[in-house]
Structure formats: structure tokens, C-alpha cells
Image (cartoon, protein in one colour):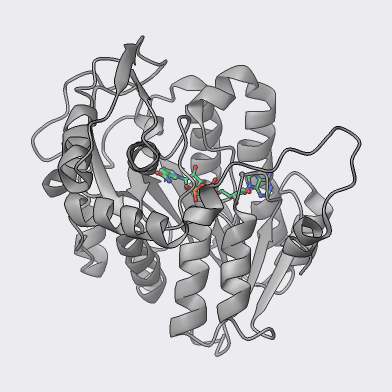
Amino acid sequence: MKASSPIRSILIFGGAGFVGSNWAHHLLTNTNAQVHIFDNLSRGKVRHNLQWLHKMAESTRLRVTIADVRDANAVNQAAATATEIYHFAAQVAVTTSLDDPRSDFEVNAGGTLNILEAARRSGNRPFILFTSTNKVYGHLGTQVGSDGVSESQPLDFYSPYGCSKGTADQYVHDYARTFGIPTVVFRMSCIAGPRQFGNEDQGWVAHFAYSALQRKALSIYGDGHQIRDVLAVQDLVRAFAAAYDNCEKTAGHVYNIGGGKANTISLLDLIAMLERVLRVRLKYRFRPARVGDQPIYVTDFTKFTQHTGWAPQKDVRTIVQDICNWYEQNASLFAPAPFVLPGAKPQPDLLREIAF
Ligand SMILES: NC(=O)c1ccc[n+]([C@@H]2O[C@H](COP(=O)([O-])OP(=O)(O)OC[C@H]3O[C@@H](n4cnc5c(N)ncnc54)[C@H](O)[C@@H]3O)[C@@H](O)[C@H]2O)c1
């Protein structure tokens, strides 16, 4: 792997997204790697992340392919020369998976198999890192112990999203066992930070912060006492780097990755924090709890710390402040979309925005 690849050729599926663009930015600023982003831009606004990367990267080091992971030919072509693959492309919301389980399965499970097969057939044995989810552990009730949830927790896929991501998680893990490809699975809880276009369906910390900044009312699903641990995207980026740098140890492993017990917060406590930080009063109303919503989830990341020395550095308050600062610096990205009459030609400046 590392020794035989002096120039890293890195392919990031979902590289325009929140996690992907932060990882790409790290690679472009701290390494001399060739970075290839593969993304279908289906997540609203992520093209802005690509524009940001294009502005700061030398054009020869950043390549972008706009395509879908369900297109096996496009995936094969992209993966042919990659020495590392980071797979973040996904249908990311439980809610959307309930509306359309088939598309959710085709993207998350089928797309992942396309990537694994492309990697296997390339003959390069690329290092592969896949971002799975804590939803593979199911509802969990209120039984989470004081140290949090470790990798020994039995799998219990819940919701179509839990099933499709869990399927992908198991395939990625098994390609290390069965085909000797150095794969790593991160089962992640809530990640938050700059460049996240969080909404009601996914990315709740950013969604709450943007709603507070825009003085918009929030819906709270459940009683608001659900507890989550939050990890800064900058800390996640450090974890990706640690997984790769220690690949002799990490290959073939699954890790729970999150902010851990020092970084927990309930929904209502986040609202109270935003009210203090922004000096606003938030309006919200309660709605019925959502399917599969865990009452409490806290990550036990001991295994990853033991293998790599990694630990989170940013606390929840700093993460929230980072999101608010990024919003203030990029407020124009959140302006309402211009109204275009049905059948009207797209405006030239909108076209230029997505022409790379
Ligand atoms: N953000 C979190 O809190 C969190 C928590 C647990 C797991 N994850 C996982 O981490 C990964 C990244 O999440 P994120 O928060 O950056 O989400 P994101 O939506 O910002 O990024 C996902 C990217 O994948 C792209 N994409 C979606 N479907 C695609 C397809 N069919 N083909 C090609 N590209 C496609 C989107 O356009 C987007 O740019 C996902 O796999 C997600 O399931 C995220």
C-alpha cells in the first residue's frame, strides 16, 4: 500500500458532500496526493463545496467526475488507478429511506458493491475506508452503558437506511476477509461542522444552528431528551488520516467513531446552548418520535484510540461556534433559491457555477 505508492491517487465517492469536501480539503492542503472526487451532486447545495475546493486547489491535483455510484461502468473507470478509496456517497437520511426503500438500497448497498467490485477488479488492492452509521446497532433503548457503545454491541439493523448501510458495512468488512483488500469501516454517530448543509432529515446540529440564525421555528421529534454524542468534522478528518497512517493495524477492522461521553448533548440542551451563544429565543414544537430514533447513543471509541492514538479534540460548544462562524461567512449560500418559471432557460451564471 503506502510503500508501493509514493504518489497517492485518492478517489472520494461523495467528495462534494460535507464529510467528503472537508477530507478533500485536508488532502489538498496537507499532502501532495492526487484527489479525484466522484459525486452526483444530489445533495442540495454541495456544488458550493466543489467551487470552494476548485478555488484553493491546483487544477492538476483535483479532478471531479459528476456521476452516480449506481453506474457500475462509471465507478469502474474512476477506480481503475486509485490507490485509496474513501466511500462517503450515500442516501443519508432515515426519513428518505422510509419514503423510497428501493432507491435507498440501490444507492447504499448496490452502490457500495459497485465500488468494492471495481476495487477488486482493478488489481491495485486499494485502501478503502467506508463511513457506516451507529444505526446498524438498532434502537438500543436506554440500555447504553456509562462507557458508551463499543463494536461488540450486536448488530440490529433498524429502518431501511439502517439495513442498506448495514449491508454495505458488512460487505466492506468482508472484502477484507474474503478478498484481502485493506478495508476499514467507521460506524459514526453525529458529525458536525463547517460545510454541512444540515436539514430536518439529516445533520441536526447544523440544522438547529441555521434555524436559530435564521430565526426559523424548529420541529422536535420525540421529547427532545434524546442524547447524542457529537464529533467535529475536523476531528473526523484526523481520524481518516490516522486510519490510513496506521493501515497495517486498522485494515480489516470496524471502529465506532464519535465524540464520546465528553461530547454528549440532548436536543433540548443544544437549543439552550444556541440561545445562550446567539442571544436569541428559539421557537419549536414537539412532534411524534421518528422510526428507529435511539433515545441515547454515546460512542465508545476505545478500540480506535488503542490502534491509532486518536481522540477527539473539539468540544460541542466549539463545534457549534464553528458552524455559526461558517454560516456568517457564507450567508449568501443560504439565501432562498431564485424563482424560475417552469420551462424557462437556466440563467447563465447558474450554468457557470456547475461547469468545471
Ligand atoms: N454526517 C453525519 O452525521 C453522518 C453520521 C453517520 C454516517 N454518515 C455517513 O457519512 C457519509 C457522508 O455523509 P455527509 O454528512 O457528508 O453527507 P452529504 O450528503 O453531505 O454527502 C454525501 C455526498 O454523496 C453524494 N451522493 C449521494 N448519492 C449519490 C450517488 N447515488 N452517487 C454519487 N454521489 C452521491 C451527495 O451528492 C453528497 O455530496 C454518508 O455515507 C453518511 O451515511 C454521516
